[in-house]
Image (cartoon, rainbow, N blue to C red; front, side, top):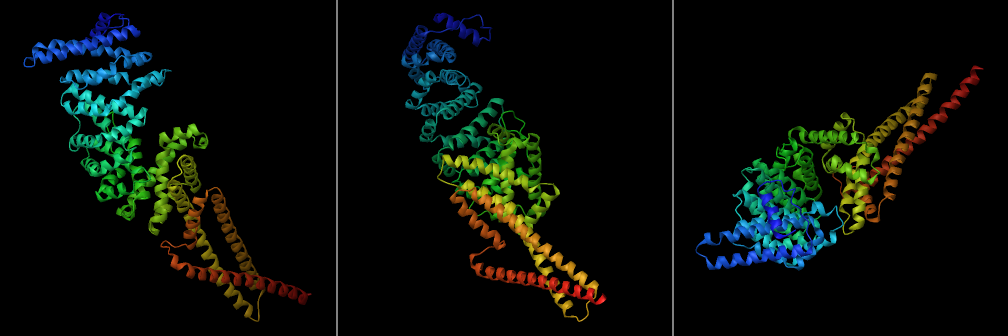
Length: 596
């Protein structure tokens, strides 16, 4: 195939003519001729520009020919085996010169072709990865983001074609970051975060006007989220008042708030996000996030998130704030407003996502592939909901705990199901921690929620049962003493006394069985933990066994005295039961002998 045929192919495409009759099949020789043509057209254009600097119409034809030569290179996008030849012959270096051309039409065409060349969707399905890398690797040395930032600066987003080129610049950025993490560091060095924040400000109080602008806006949000892989970018975002901008976007209730939710979710999700959580709360972000929490908005644009994604962002943000903010009291207070309506809404979310997961057969969770699939279908959101419930149950006051317990009971939410969700999440957190052993915060949080939500409820009921049994035992022991002090005791009194003693025995045995059950459950969970989490659980168990919402280590001695007193009282009650029982049977035997 010769160069004329290539130009014919490009003309057929540009004129929307059926180009299937044009045979597009390249070899090394044709690539060399193609690049040689492009170099000649570029050199001629530069010569004409210098010669006729004051009369643009005289060099316009040379730029049209240059533009056609640029588009011919797009045929290479399906021939990965020729990428090394394209680079060796200077094609990539020439492209970087074209990206700094004075004519924005030339820049637009070059960006379009470059985007086609580094499209990741097709290369992953082929065996040409090594050849593809021959094109990608030099981009870092040529400082691709510096050039793209220049292009974005000179292009006018009010022009349809140039706005599309800006979109493709961001698409190139996203593809490179996704393909190789070394480009993230390069992006950070270009301080592109400040430019992204500046661009997003235009959508603070208005919606995008065109479909292309919608795609551009959401692509900018995605690039911003991708840049947070580096801590330096997060700091730049914080210093540039990016969090305040996201809060304002959520407050304005424009389409941009859906992208803002995604950005806030990303920046708060890391283990070191405490400063960002505090900054979000100080920026009055709680009012905005709970507005979306109470009523999920709908994004009608196809480029935006769906309902499940919006709810995932919102619940993940609230979960991160509860786990990582230095003072979660303001957030906990939000759940007490308007007669605990936000707790009711949280339980609604729990029931909704529980039903979604149960329809997907949660019993097959042991299969890792199905677990990953379920995460995308709503399991991740369900895990966040359960963690929020666990933190509220442990950190909130008694009325909040009682509200959660009553609503869970009304909705027929079994505690065993909640434990299963948390344990499954904890197992996968452990898998991640094996690869990154710097922190076990995620594991501790899961243990906190598991014991805080489940064992707090168990121990509270156990405490109530023990209190009732001990109180009844004390009263009945006193009644037994009074009855024994009477000189005359009828058979009816003795019979009822025997029944009371038997009831006490059954009560104490049941109470002891409950204690043993909780103890062995605790031991089993404890033995399945590593050393760091065992220390955490020991501390947490002390909190639970003190049975005090406002636990203080200064109260340990007084709690020991109370425990000794209850133990002595229980021992005395048990002794009285034995005495009463022994006392009854001899009397019964003596009564029988007299009658005989």
